[in-house]
Image (cartoon, rainbow, N blue to C red; front, side, top):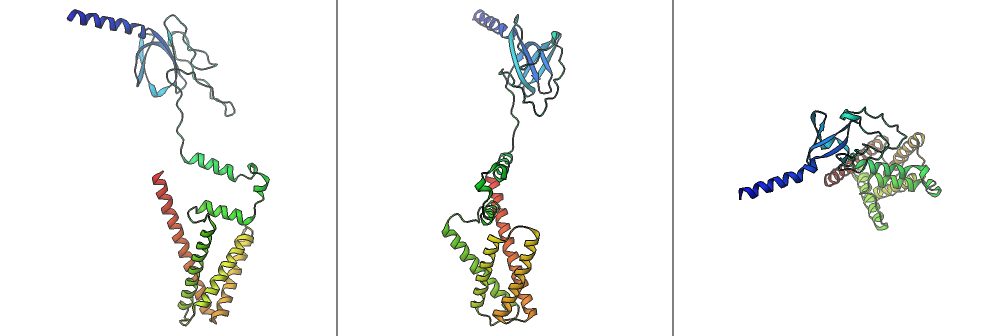
Length: 285
Protein backbone atom coordinates (compact mmCIF):
# COMPACT_ATOMS: atom_id res chain seq x y z
CA UNK A 1 0.00 0.00 0.00
CA UNK A 2 2.83 2.42 0.87
CA UNK A 3 4.55 1.61 -2.41
CA UNK A 4 1.38 2.40 -4.36
CA UNK A 5 1.04 5.75 -2.59
CA UNK A 6 4.68 6.57 -3.36
CA UNK A 7 4.19 5.74 -7.02
CA UNK A 8 1.06 7.90 -7.18
CA UNK A 9 2.82 10.86 -5.59
CA UNK A 10 5.75 10.50 -8.00
CA UNK A 11 3.36 10.42 -10.98
CA UNK A 12 1.63 13.57 -9.74
CA UNK A 13 4.95 15.42 -9.37
CA UNK A 14 5.99 14.35 -12.85
CA UNK A 15 2.72 15.72 -14.21
CA UNK A 16 3.28 19.06 -12.44
CA UNK A 17 6.80 19.52 -13.80
CA UNK A 18 5.71 20.58 -17.34
CA UNK A 19 3.32 23.12 -15.81
CA UNK A 20 6.23 24.76 -13.96
CA UNK A 21 8.44 24.83 -17.07
CA UNK A 22 6.71 27.88 -18.49
CA UNK A 23 7.84 31.41 -19.17
CA UNK A 24 5.65 34.40 -18.60
CA UNK A 25 5.71 38.07 -19.58
CA UNK A 26 3.65 40.28 -17.26
CA UNK A 27 2.77 43.96 -17.66
CA UNK A 28 1.98 45.65 -14.33
CA UNK A 29 -0.32 48.60 -13.65
CA UNK A 30 2.64 51.00 -13.35
CA UNK A 31 3.93 50.08 -16.83
CA UNK A 32 6.74 47.81 -15.64
CA UNK A 33 7.27 44.56 -17.57
CA UNK A 34 8.47 41.46 -15.73
CA UNK A 35 9.59 38.33 -17.59
CA UNK A 36 10.79 35.03 -16.18
CA UNK A 37 9.96 31.47 -15.23
CA UNK A 38 6.66 30.63 -13.53
CA UNK A 39 7.27 29.28 -10.03
CA UNK A 40 3.74 29.32 -8.60
CA UNK A 41 0.35 30.51 -9.81
CA UNK A 42 -2.93 30.90 -7.98
CA UNK A 43 -5.95 33.24 -8.04
CA UNK A 44 -4.29 35.81 -5.79
CA UNK A 45 -0.67 36.05 -6.93
CA UNK A 46 1.90 34.94 -9.48
CA UNK A 47 5.48 34.04 -8.47
CA UNK A 48 8.07 34.63 -11.19
CA UNK A 49 11.75 33.67 -11.07
CA UNK A 50 13.70 36.66 -12.38
CA UNK A 51 17.40 35.84 -12.47
CA UNK A 52 18.40 34.48 -9.07
CA UNK A 53 15.38 35.85 -7.19
CA UNK A 54 11.65 35.08 -7.04
CA UNK A 55 9.26 38.02 -7.37
CA UNK A 56 5.66 37.70 -6.20
CA UNK A 57 3.19 39.77 -8.23
CA UNK A 58 -0.34 40.41 -6.97
CA UNK A 59 -3.10 39.55 -9.43
CA UNK A 60 -4.70 42.98 -8.91
CA UNK A 61 -1.61 44.70 -10.38
CA UNK A 62 -1.46 42.61 -13.56
CA UNK A 63 -2.67 44.40 -16.68
CA UNK A 64 -1.69 41.71 -19.20
CA UNK A 65 -0.06 38.28 -18.99
CA UNK A 66 1.36 36.08 -21.80
CA UNK A 67 2.67 32.55 -21.25
CA UNK A 68 5.12 30.53 -23.38
CA UNK A 69 6.73 27.15 -23.06
CA UNK A 70 10.41 26.77 -22.32
CA UNK A 71 12.36 27.01 -25.55
CA UNK A 72 9.76 29.22 -27.27
CA UNK A 73 9.95 33.04 -27.33
CA UNK A 74 7.60 34.73 -24.90
CA UNK A 75 4.79 36.80 -26.36
CA UNK A 76 4.83 40.55 -26.41
CA UNK A 77 3.53 42.36 -23.35
CA UNK A 78 1.27 44.59 -25.44
CA UNK A 79 0.40 45.10 -29.05
CA UNK A 80 3.02 47.24 -30.80
CA UNK A 81 5.41 47.33 -27.81
CA UNK A 82 8.77 45.53 -27.62
CA UNK A 83 9.20 42.67 -25.17
CA UNK A 84 11.26 42.83 -21.98
CA UNK A 85 15.02 43.10 -21.97
CA UNK A 86 17.04 39.89 -21.75
CA UNK A 87 17.81 38.63 -18.30
CA UNK A 88 14.44 39.61 -16.82
CA UNK A 89 15.44 43.25 -16.16
CA UNK A 90 12.42 45.54 -15.82
CA UNK A 91 11.82 47.73 -18.84
CA UNK A 92 11.26 51.45 -18.72
CA UNK A 93 7.63 52.51 -18.32
CA UNK A 94 5.99 53.51 -21.61
CA UNK A 95 5.32 57.21 -22.22
CA UNK A 96 1.92 58.55 -21.30
CA UNK A 97 -0.57 58.30 -24.12
CA UNK A 98 -1.98 61.49 -25.60
CA UNK A 99 -5.59 62.41 -24.97
CA UNK A 100 -6.34 62.18 -28.69
CA UNK A 101 -4.67 58.80 -29.24
CA UNK A 102 -6.93 55.82 -28.46
CA UNK A 103 -5.58 53.40 -25.86
CA UNK A 104 -3.90 50.25 -27.08
CA UNK A 105 -5.70 46.99 -26.72
CA UNK A 106 -4.11 44.56 -24.30
CA UNK A 107 -3.66 40.95 -25.48
CA UNK A 108 -6.20 38.40 -24.40
CA UNK A 109 -4.08 36.49 -21.91
CA UNK A 110 -4.95 34.85 -18.64
CA UNK A 111 -5.90 38.13 -16.96
CA UNK A 112 -7.65 40.83 -18.97
CA UNK A 113 -7.45 44.54 -18.37
CA UNK A 114 -9.72 45.67 -15.57
CA UNK A 115 -12.45 48.22 -16.30
CA UNK A 116 -12.55 51.27 -14.08
CA UNK A 117 -15.74 51.61 -11.99
CA UNK A 118 -18.20 54.29 -13.00
CA UNK A 119 -20.81 56.03 -10.91
CA UNK A 120 -24.49 55.78 -11.70
CA UNK A 121 -24.89 59.55 -12.03
CA UNK A 122 -22.46 60.14 -14.89
CA UNK A 123 -24.39 58.33 -17.68
CA UNK A 124 -27.66 60.01 -16.65
CA UNK A 125 -26.01 63.45 -16.62
CA UNK A 126 -24.47 62.84 -20.03
CA UNK A 127 -27.80 61.77 -21.48
CA UNK A 128 -29.50 64.81 -19.96
CA UNK A 129 -26.83 67.13 -21.38
CA UNK A 130 -27.26 65.61 -24.84
CA UNK A 131 -31.03 65.91 -24.59
CA UNK A 132 -30.88 69.60 -23.60
CA UNK A 133 -28.16 70.57 -26.09
CA UNK A 134 -29.86 72.68 -28.80
CA UNK A 135 -27.22 71.72 -31.37
CA UNK A 136 -28.16 68.03 -31.16
CA UNK A 137 -31.90 68.60 -31.48
CA UNK A 138 -33.92 68.85 -34.69
CA UNK A 139 -35.20 72.19 -35.90
CA UNK A 140 -38.76 71.68 -34.70
CA UNK A 141 -37.56 70.96 -31.14
CA UNK A 142 -35.36 74.03 -31.00
CA UNK A 143 -38.37 76.27 -31.74
CA UNK A 144 -40.75 74.87 -29.17
CA UNK A 145 -43.29 77.22 -27.53
CA UNK A 146 -42.30 78.89 -24.29
CA UNK A 147 -45.02 77.16 -22.29
CA UNK A 148 -43.86 73.72 -23.45
CA UNK A 149 -40.26 74.46 -22.49
CA UNK A 150 -41.31 75.62 -19.04
CA UNK A 151 -43.59 72.63 -18.64
CA UNK A 152 -40.70 70.30 -19.40
CA UNK A 153 -38.52 72.17 -16.91
CA UNK A 154 -41.24 71.76 -14.29
CA UNK A 155 -41.46 68.06 -15.08
CA UNK A 156 -37.68 67.73 -14.67
CA UNK A 157 -37.71 69.57 -11.35
CA UNK A 158 -40.81 67.91 -9.86
CA UNK A 159 -41.61 64.72 -11.81
CA UNK A 160 -44.00 63.54 -9.09
CA UNK A 161 -46.03 66.78 -9.21
CA UNK A 162 -46.39 67.44 -12.94
CA UNK A 163 -49.54 65.70 -14.32
CA UNK A 164 -49.36 63.33 -17.27
CA UNK A 165 -53.07 63.02 -18.13
CA UNK A 166 -55.75 65.68 -18.80
CA UNK A 167 -57.89 64.57 -15.86
CA UNK A 168 -54.91 65.10 -13.58
CA UNK A 169 -54.64 68.70 -14.77
CA UNK A 170 -58.27 69.21 -13.78
CA UNK A 171 -57.60 67.77 -10.34
CA UNK A 172 -54.48 69.90 -9.86
CA UNK A 173 -56.31 73.05 -11.00
CA UNK A 174 -59.19 72.36 -8.60
CA UNK A 175 -56.75 71.86 -5.73
CA UNK A 176 -54.97 75.13 -6.51
CA UNK A 177 -58.30 76.96 -6.74
CA UNK A 178 -59.40 75.70 -3.31
CA UNK A 179 -56.08 76.50 -1.67
CA UNK A 180 -55.93 80.01 -3.14
CA UNK A 181 -59.48 80.70 -2.04
CA UNK A 182 -58.66 79.63 1.52
CA UNK A 183 -55.43 81.67 1.52
CA UNK A 184 -57.22 84.84 0.36
CA UNK A 185 -60.11 84.35 2.81
CA UNK A 186 -57.73 83.78 5.74
CA UNK A 187 -55.57 86.77 4.81
CA UNK A 188 -58.58 89.11 4.67
CA UNK A 189 -59.81 87.93 8.07
CA UNK A 190 -56.33 88.39 9.55
CA UNK A 191 -56.25 91.92 8.09
CA UNK A 192 -59.33 92.80 10.17
CA UNK A 193 -62.36 92.13 7.94
CA UNK A 194 -64.20 89.44 9.91
CA UNK A 195 -67.40 89.62 7.82
CA UNK A 196 -65.71 88.73 4.53
CA UNK A 197 -67.59 86.31 2.30
CA UNK A 198 -66.13 83.38 0.45
CA UNK A 199 -67.34 84.68 -2.92
CA UNK A 200 -64.73 87.44 -3.08
CA UNK A 201 -62.02 84.96 -2.13
CA UNK A 202 -63.08 82.66 -4.97
CA UNK A 203 -63.03 85.60 -7.39
CA UNK A 204 -59.50 86.51 -6.29
CA UNK A 205 -58.42 82.85 -6.67
CA UNK A 206 -59.75 82.78 -10.24
CA UNK A 207 -57.83 85.96 -11.04
CA UNK A 208 -54.64 84.50 -9.53
CA UNK A 209 -54.98 81.32 -11.60
CA UNK A 210 -55.73 83.15 -14.85
CA UNK A 211 -52.89 85.65 -14.39
CA UNK A 212 -50.44 82.92 -13.42
CA UNK A 213 -51.36 80.80 -16.44
CA UNK A 214 -50.97 83.71 -18.87
CA UNK A 215 -47.62 84.73 -17.41
CA UNK A 216 -46.42 81.11 -17.46
CA UNK A 217 -47.17 80.89 -21.18
CA UNK A 218 -46.29 84.36 -22.44
CA UNK A 219 -43.85 86.26 -20.21
CA UNK A 220 -40.27 85.75 -21.48
CA UNK A 221 -37.38 84.84 -19.24
CA UNK A 222 -35.07 87.56 -17.96
CA UNK A 223 -34.43 89.74 -14.94
CA UNK A 224 -36.29 92.74 -16.31
CA UNK A 225 -39.36 90.70 -17.21
CA UNK A 226 -39.32 89.01 -13.80
CA UNK A 227 -39.09 92.33 -11.98
CA UNK A 228 -41.90 93.88 -14.03
CA UNK A 229 -44.07 90.80 -13.44
CA UNK A 230 -43.55 90.90 -9.67
CA UNK A 231 -44.30 94.60 -9.40
CA UNK A 232 -47.36 94.34 -11.64
CA UNK A 233 -48.75 91.35 -9.75
CA UNK A 234 -48.32 93.07 -6.38
CA UNK A 235 -50.01 96.26 -7.60
CA UNK A 236 -52.94 94.41 -9.19
CA UNK A 237 -53.40 92.16 -6.16
CA UNK A 238 -53.62 95.17 -3.83
CA UNK A 239 -55.98 96.90 -6.26
CA UNK A 240 -58.38 93.93 -6.39
CA UNK A 241 -58.27 93.50 -2.62
CA UNK A 242 -59.38 97.10 -2.13
CA UNK A 243 -62.03 96.89 -4.87
CA UNK A 244 -63.58 93.60 -3.72
CA UNK A 245 -63.37 93.96 0.07
CA UNK A 246 -63.11 97.73 0.52
CA UNK A 247 -60.02 97.43 2.75
CA UNK A 248 -57.90 100.34 3.84
CA UNK A 249 -54.38 100.72 2.54
CA UNK A 250 -52.76 99.31 5.67
CA UNK A 251 -55.20 96.41 5.81
CA UNK A 252 -54.59 95.72 2.12
CA UNK A 253 -50.82 95.55 2.67
CA UNK A 254 -51.31 93.24 5.65
CA UNK A 255 -53.59 90.92 3.66
CA UNK A 256 -51.15 90.81 0.73
CA UNK A 257 -48.18 90.05 3.02
CA UNK A 258 -50.13 87.23 4.66
CA UNK A 259 -50.90 85.77 1.24
CA UNK A 260 -47.20 85.85 0.36
CA UNK A 261 -46.49 84.05 3.64
CA UNK A 262 -49.02 81.34 2.80
CA UNK A 263 -47.48 80.96 -0.65
CA UNK A 264 -43.97 80.62 0.82
CA UNK A 265 -45.27 78.00 3.25
CA UNK A 266 -46.82 76.01 0.40
CA UNK A 267 -43.56 76.15 -1.60
CA UNK A 268 -41.67 74.95 1.48
CA UNK A 269 -44.01 71.96 1.81
CA UNK A 270 -43.47 71.10 -1.86
CA UNK A 271 -39.68 71.30 -1.46
CA UNK A 272 -39.81 69.14 1.66
CA UNK A 273 -41.92 66.50 -0.09
CA UNK A 274 -39.56 66.53 -3.08
CA UNK A 275 -36.53 66.04 -0.82
CA UNK A 276 -38.20 63.13 0.98
CA UNK A 277 -39.18 61.43 -2.28
CA UNK A 278 -35.68 61.86 -3.74
CA UNK A 279 -34.06 60.42 -0.61
CA UNK A 280 -36.41 57.42 -0.66
CA UNK A 281 -35.65 56.83 -4.34
CA UNK A 282 -31.90 57.09 -3.72
CA UNK A 283 -32.20 54.61 -0.87
CA UNK A 284 -33.94 52.04 -3.08
CA UNK A 285 -31.54 52.56 -6.02
